[in-house]
Length: 398
Image 1 (cartoon, rainbow, N blue to C red):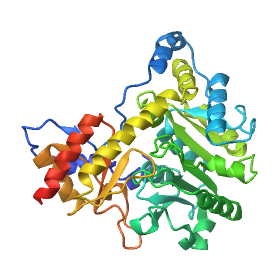
Image 2 (image 1 turned 30 degrees about the horizontal axis):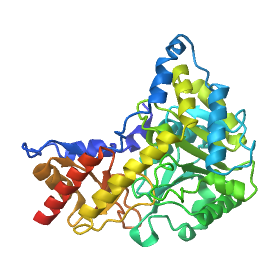
Image 3 (image 1 turned 90 degrees about the vertical axis):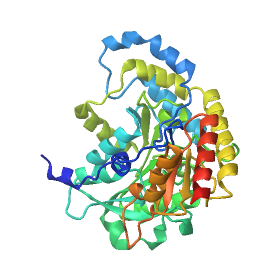
């Protein structure tokens, strides 16, 4: 087997299962999980209808490039959402449907990296673990940029040595961030685009939480949006990843897209024809319906706002928490060790959260996720309120 497989760490939820294996949760309480970021809101009816009405697609091999109607819907949505110049995002050159951002991020890394002893994939820390695994299995080394409360949970890119940028082939940003919810500013993205030009690396923006934000008047800025503001209609060196999992409550459909520099999308399409990862036809048609509708997305945001407001009111008197700019996570500092906090909370309140240390790696003597837990506010408003009440009860017992 590929020896690089030995470099992969267990996924955070495997570590969580091991941490809590011997715990006997309070039997008088129903279990609640805030551990996994799996949306629990109902799937949009128009998407379910589109799947049911197009089951004849089961009889057809889907193409890797996908239906033109889907690629057009993707480009139209991105153009509206990110104020792109009309027609600058060409469905024939700049966008591909993918089976969720996790699959696409991993595959894109394999297609992009030129194997070399000094190749680096740079990512935030804490981070979505697929960035690390994709780097190792592409023959590169991950390089972590610490995100702390002191830097607003955005990496200090000015502190990165030139020697790192010279070795960097791919820089991942996650904006809005998982797990912190922090959003990169347009000014920061412009700085990163300039660095990508100077050092000839690719800038990949994971934006799968971009449609869950608290201030309706201030949606998170996107990488393609900043390219457009700079007059870079070729989106050179830049790609973005988007998903219907969070935006449209469709984690089980595994549908998203990659868009950006045609000089990168074209070779990636070639890779994907060998990868065998085309999206089923009925899912492509249903995805088209989802990208063309915003009403269900606005309703979704309203539910998250209600949950964040209610949970913050309950927890803020006893925990160091602040509302994120976007995403559906609360990144909460713990009054005790994050693993001990997680074990005690499950044992006493039958409630699961994820220790922050499982989402980070020790870098420069710092493990930036330690002392935090990630809470995914994905359940109903009522269940999230009950969860917050139990967490407060536990904290007050310490």
